[in-house]
Amino acid sequence: MTTTAELAEFTGTVSYDSLPSDVRDALKKRVLDSVGIGIGAIGAEPVDAVAATVTEFGHGGPSRLWGRKETVPPAQAAMYNTALTRYLDFMDSFLAPGETPHPSDNIASVIACGEVVDASGQDLLEGIGVAYEIQGELAWNAPVRDRGFDHVTHTVVSAAAGAGKVLGLTPDQLRNAIGIAGTAHNALRVTRTGGINEWKGIASANAARNAVYSVLLARNGMEGPVDLFEGQKGWKEVVSGEFEVELDPRCEQVFDTMTKRYVAETYAQSAVEGIIELAEREELDHEAVEAIRLDTFAGAKLIIGGGEGSRYEVETKAQADHSLPYMLAASLIDREMTNTAYESERIRRDAVQTLLRTVEVTEDPELTDRFENGEMPARIEIELTDGTVHRIEKDAFGGHPSDPMSWDQLEEKFVTMTEDRYDADRRTEIVTTIRNLEERDVDDLVTLLD
Image: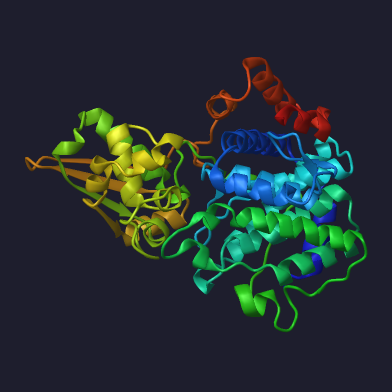
């Protein structure tokens, strides 16, 4: 039986030396990806609302707000910096059959707490490895989506463990911290159903803040429910159901985490890649398209294909990046899916609004089986007004665990996201620091993110 103590004890067993070299490399790639995405989100209206909130009553604290001059308490920094890494929907995703959380939601919490104790780069990798391992195990073995809870219900637990690790909490303190975090902060799935709003992109930031605050409470002596999972009316009974995890101090769950090539919801990646390839191959004119038909797997149909509310009424970014009809229509017209696709004037284009209503999304049980066995399949059929039909099928996409992004590809993505803010020398310095993180410390990294 998985217990709260088991997670706390596991966290203590992870060390830099327990992480294989390829795991360390993969974790550093996730840091680079997250930092780049975060810098690219600076100035987004919902992110600015978070910044205004965390600084409203004064500045000061050990932790920096990325891209800004202010320092704040670590819980506030965790919220703002996680909002940066999550808001654009360009972050990584852990691919489990019943849940698709975003382990990069943990990174800012570890870094913010690392600033409290002047952590080394090795310390950061330990904390991030802990968080990725716990998030992945919970996603595989304790999915909560179908029970009405949001996936950030996992994040508050994994971020508490990762943050507690870097702060050097004792096993008893970690058990209390995890108990506080997991008892008090269970988020509802309504965040991502029906009419999508901007909280979708900020919910994990709130979970990060709650995780760090829970850790700080435990660090200062606060007791929590030390039987969070196994206790009467506890997490298993109320939130997840019975489950078992097999936590490994090598932290290899990072290898089941994909990185995004396109600014689009996780389950849309193969379909977006496929329709762009098809449009370019056949030189398709969107005005000649009669219908777009997508066969996909159950999770994609449920979340972004209409299973949790209409995905044809698209007026905002939050609605657009969770609408397969919109993403397919925009990708076909533009031959790309970048941040610009979510600008208001581009969302409301007559051409894209007309084309998205020709999209039909259908779940295929065979594709669901393939997804549950590690693929991310998509089958696309485009019918033209003259009756011609063009088809393409994808098993996965660039960035899927079966085809992971290289350092060169991630650096190219990083440049794209940060070139408007940093010159070439600063970008090179950030990349070099992250690639050699075990030889640096937290201050070396965060001082580059002003």
